[in-house]
Every structure is written in C-alpha cells, then in structure tokens.
Image 1 (cartoon, rainbow, N blue to C red):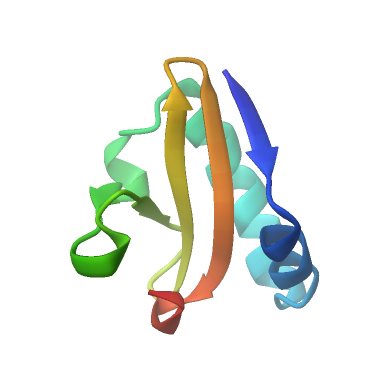
Image 2: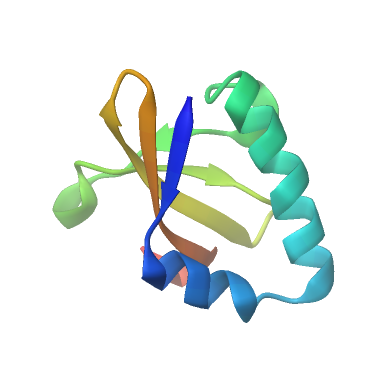
Length: 84
C-alpha cells in the first residue's frame, strides 16, 4: 500500500502537538497493516465529504483520506473533529 500526503495534510501535520504527531505515526503503522483495524475507528464520511473516509488518532484528532485505488491511499487532512 502506498500513501500520498497532500500538501494541506503536511501543513496541518506540522502544526499538531508533539504527542499527537507521535500517536499519529503509530496509528499510521496500524493503518498500513489494516485500514479497518478496530483501534482506528475507520468510518465513511457523509454529506459533502461523502467520498472520503476518516480514522481516529485519538478522541479529538482524525485523519481524512480516500482510496485512489486498491493500493493507493491519499491523506487529505488531519486535525480535530472540526476538519469535517
């Protein structure tokens, strides 16, 4: 699986608190093994973002992504729940 990081995602990631960045890296490792691991709480978004998915870094922070194809995932945004 290949993950592409959009520039918006990269900018938002840089602004995250240090402990959230560390946890996000750990969660991405789990994601690479199984995007639907129960620890990630992966879910499909609705409404205007209906083509996207999200998974939890912790209770407050999420990563928004989509599946470009079977082996390519694109990370669009990272932040608190209000990034939806």
